[in-house]
Image 1 (cartoon, rainbow, N blue to C red):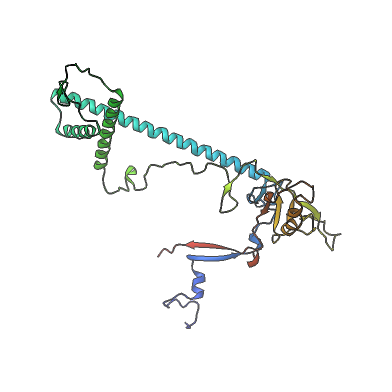
Image 2: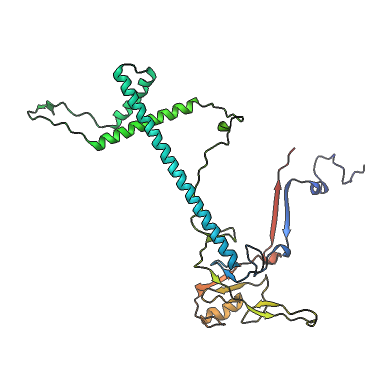
Amino acid sequence: MSRHSKNNTARGHFTYAEMQMLDYGTKKQRLGRDSMRDYDACFLCLQTARDPVCCPEGHIACKECIYENILSQKQEIQRQAKQVEIQTLQEASEQENRELLAHQIILDEFEKSQMGVLSKAASVRTKGVAGSAGASSPGSPATPGESNGKKNDKKRTFELDTEELERISKQERIDVAKVIEDEAKSKRPVLPSFWVPSLTPSNKKTEYKATKLHTMCTASENEHKLSLKNLISVKFEMAFEDHDDSETTEPKKSAICPICRKGFTNTTKLSILKSCGHVFCDSCCGKFVKKEGKCQTCGVKTKEKEIVSMTGEGSGFSGGGAKEAKKFDVAFQ
């Protein structure tokens, strides 16, 4: 075996050839023009947009695709809201059942204490609950015959404050329910059991949260709100391409700028008007549309804030939006 052979794996470090043969680690690959979608391609179906519309951030899509996407997002929002509502009702029902159980335990202990058959554990628990309830309740009133060290000839009437009694009763039920829950937790095994489904570490109660409250545009990493009202209908001006061999091939239509009559490519920066939906190249839009304050195609008045820059994926070159794909695999050794 030669010293510089590619199959020489006895060294203490990886060679370049060995790194190329590995199936794990971080791998990088630069994306070229073939991996970029066209300037007029839908970001959902990746095909040329049919009846194109644009969001307020300049992402183009088919009208049918964006409508279907918004509908599916609304259905998902409704599903999540329904799951949250069901979970809330279940939690309220469990809390009510715990309070009913605590109320029943309090009544049973009271009956046993009156009969003199109350167990020691139950009496200790009742004492702890009574102590917490007594600490939270206001101080005891003075005796009927004395008030601030002076005798009072008037008879005191016994009055019950229903709100205070309800508060004390509720606090007592909560304390008993907490004691019951603590006892149930203490009886559970500390170490998880992988062979018992109810004791596995991953067996936790799923909590549903409404992650989405509005429909969002997912064309970029920074998602933004999207609705049917703020969609812009895109109007490209089409023209036939020039071909030398026009006899053999049929001429194809392509989008051009209505002012400079230049064809659009992925390297062209485009701007669209919210008022009418016509698309211009960025340089012509700055020279004519912004200065005159109206569309050069249909004459509709437009403001500078109504001009939206359309976003594209670029050409794949360093100056036109270079992108890189990364993949990471764990090494199992």
